[in-house]
Image (cartoon, rainbow, N blue to C red; front, side, top):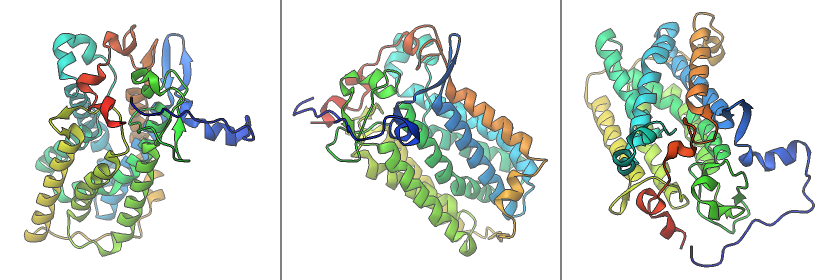
Length: 352
């Protein structure tokens, strides 16, 4: 790293105990608790909550357009969530394709999921479910597009405390310094110990909350089925492109394009297809029943068990590590060492 590295200064007047002190240092609370050799990271609990809120919100949307909420919740638990996790895991592995050939077992057993893979996995599940049930594919996509900004906003808080998706060094007053050796940023970039970096996860959280607020305001004026899916698939990549300049984490690169750029362009392409199909076809515009509230869905006794299992499944998938954070095996990162030059998106150069 060239240039002068500036370390986070210590505010001697800041409280060292209490809630405010906890919140100020929340990003360093990587580990939630330990049970022998098993470690549960804070990100797991937040991811579980994100999936719970996201799926229940999607179920609420489907209820507002007339679908059976218990059936929708069951679909998410048994079909959509497994597809989301499997494809997001696969795309994460593909980011490390060189290590996959060198150390296949260790690479396969190293924790990691990728958001864009989850999005594409969900779309595959929706297409299959619609084919076999005759439930409107556009409605299913709308439900997902409507809930995703809210779920992702919550999940970004998990990224913040886990230390993934980290930002570039900054002199900004909003910069944060990671000191937990368990955080992903310091496991991958120990030279960033105590260095103020952009809290890109919180930037994304704010952007997606604004995105969801806009979507919610548009509910009464939905023009066609597929509208929310198209809006999400087009606007989400725009947010990612805008935040790209602040990030410095390992996302892989093909030429001058990052994997995130490539997946984002694919999302825009899918979004335009949904937009054209929704506007040009004879697909119906299912009415929105705004009298059905979110609390009616989340508190429905026929659906709540599905939501609880979704919460627990996400907690387990994203939260459980063995002996060392970043490992499902006895060795840190499954015995695979990170090669920043090879798979780090030129991270050594982007902070110059």
